[in-house]
Image 1 (cartoon, rainbow, N blue to C red):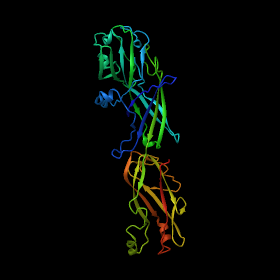
Image 2: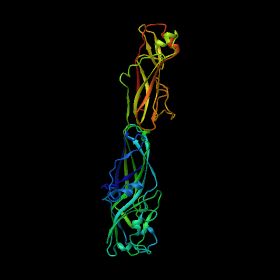
Image 3: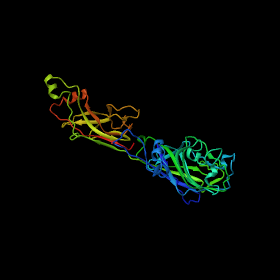
Image 4: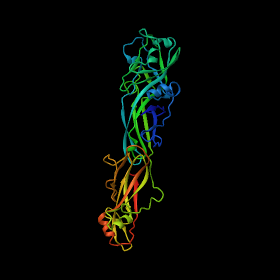
Amino acid sequence: MPLALALGCTSLTAQAFVEDITAVFRPDPTNPMSNKFKNTTAHSGVCAWHIPTRCEALNIFSIRNMEFRAESATPIAAGHTDPRQGAYFKVPSAWRDVQVTHTGTGESATVQMRIAGVGTRWDIAYPPGVSAWQYEGKPWDFYWKAGAPPCVGLGYHAAWINFGLFFWSVPENAGACSLTPGYDIPWLKYSYMEYGYELRTPNPLTMTAGEYRGSLTYSMGPGGDFDFGDVMIPSDNIATFNFTLQVEHILKVTLPPGGNRVELLPEGGWQAWLNRGRQPSRLSRDQTFSIFSSGRFKMTLECGLAIGNTCGLRNGAGDEVPLQVAVSLPFGLHNQRDEPVNRQPLRRDGVGTELIQSVHYVNNRPGTLHFQVDKEDVSDMLKAPGSTYSGVVTVIWDSEV
């Protein structure tokens, strides 16, 4: 999931950039198959203001930080052979893991991040001005526009006689991108910096609802993760990224009107069995419900009358029979074995339904509760003809897994 990166400068004694990166997962009824976090960190700079269509095509976002500064510690020699002695940009373009932890439960998940773009405004001594970058027959602005390999230009460049602005995309696992001038440069400085980044987030459907936090720290300066060579010295030496991921799940179950009252009947109704003069093989009723679910939940039973690991029915004389309850869930909801849930028995101890996982956001889809009295228990009920058996069964969908 490509997102944008900003580095915020503070006055910490450790000289550090500190940036807060935020993302949220919220089920989208209009796109239930999308199980991704949405970046909620505001972006700015090149992609926001100058080439949004080009950036969108490349899935790159940018943030411009106006507090960043870097200045040359020594003059830059023309035609130098060490790329670290000129305009040198090496950023952490490889994926790096960061653990984020649920602030309430301690549950952890892994986010991956990489820097995917770099740009700045550079100011140069005048003379020689921007023409100092003419080298080996190339126009001075050739690499600023096209990108210094392995970096790739995005067609954005602006300049005047003594400054230029650029932004390059940085391929995954790229090395350093550097330019060598054709004329001596007395001094060079960078007066802001902008970055692009990509973020791989975990599957939110497997995460508990709530807030997850974590931090990732990069070094900055010569030889660091953000390395601008040996001449250009940044004002900060640490870049810290604080992640906050918000997971907002939904779990909602609705019954049709009157669906909380269930009448058990033999197949075809009582009259058909009475006309045949035979005992019904079972009493049953299927009750449909609608479910909205984007996360994990478990299911259990609570019983007005408990018989073993299930609920029971009782008549006025105190005779009791067990009631079997099962559930079938719609496509997109799997059990702990990653299998569809079809006539799964519901038990008081919750065994078998201790984990139901959303494969994608299930939005107002039908499921079924199956209620049944088995044949041998029907035989016991018929020993008391004319009596009514009743009971209270509470089916619990619990998101606290």
